[in-house]
Image (cartoon, rainbow, N blue to C red; front, side):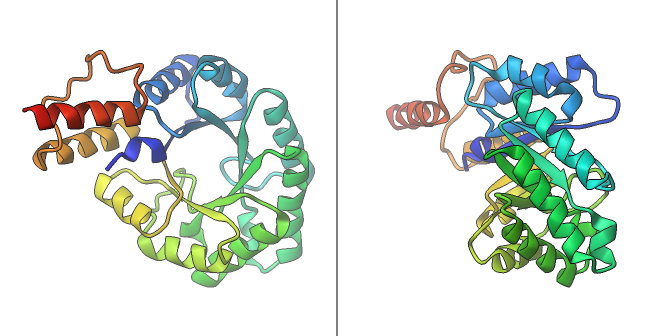
Length: 251
């Protein structure tokens, strides 16, 4: 499975340094990831590092608790877009959702969508803190607010996205919003949520997922002797897999 094109590598640790951001960007370019996600303090720097590559830069808004005021979230979103973000990932106002203040929750999302000025907005639900009704309702409100996608979790709180989450959110969104699986650290889990319809995977373990995919392919005889120092870095994933397939046929 070519999992690389589904991976959004996340680096939002509170102690992340510029060196950490550079490492994530280099990894994303090298493995042809879908994108990266960083905090607003590093969005401009990250964008400068991947400007020459087809790697999308997402910026968090209201991270990690979602507890910032609506105006503060909108301002952070505007800052992110102005400084190069391709999209923003806002954290749901979880506490307001838990007590049923859905008008507030929806307005919170709407203001960020407006501040994004046409750029994609993802709503991080923190599914581990919500019951199924709250997950479904929050996803529905994200659709009404004009968000582009929802993500199950940020990865900040301990919770493993499962197939049930993806199925529930896709049903709740009624095909009008994409669903991203957050907090994925295991290759088998990644395959399962993608098979269930997740649009992509947000993870801090991208390289481990890639290596697991390569190991699986080697076991299946798809190709052999993958070498991370090989001269394929400038190939697209499609070019790489076509080359390896042809090589396998020759052997």
